[in-house]
Length: 71
Image (cartoon, rainbow, N blue to C red; front, side, top):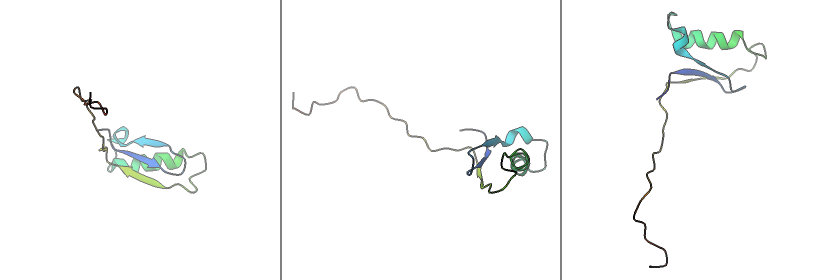
């Protein structure tokens, strides 16, 4: 798991919402920060809220694998 964050799909920048815990709604405050500091003056920003849960695949190696040649 990771912290919730706002991601701009246009430029790839992101901001951790927990940096704005004192705000009434931290995701909106993080979005506002990204808009204020945007290199493109906030034009064309496409924001996405990531809740902090990511799908991961854990693979464990198998110790006793059979040889494809039957040995």
